[in-house]
Amino acid sequence: MNKSYQALAVVWGVQHYRHFLLGRKFVLITDHSALRYVFQPVRSTPKLSRWAACLMEYDYILRYRPGNANPADALSRLPVVENERNSGTDVQDETPEAN
Image 1 (cartoon, rainbow, N blue to C red):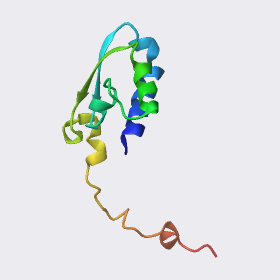
Image 2: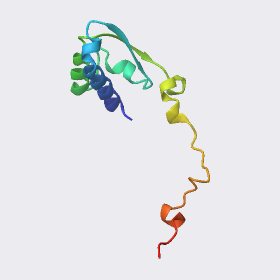
Image 3: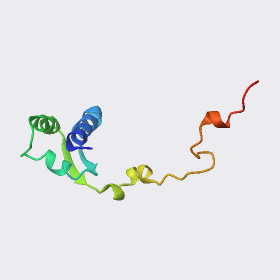
Image 4: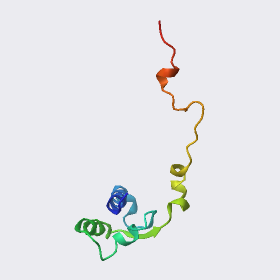
């Protein structure tokens, strides 16, 4: 996922929880290393500059944590285990014919 989508997710989440976050110091933890620089004074696009301006009213610290060290990301990294019930056969193949 590119940095614009990641930045949009941060802005949307912060604005969604605005009533909890305004006036409080909080930490934004991201697993996308490019976001560390997106909200800095020098930005690449006008869109990112506008989003950074939206976040200026909040008192936050942006921290990077790699995805493999992020417990919230653990379920998405679990290996998929095939079992007998999920063997790739179609449900219609297992359903008896009605006469």
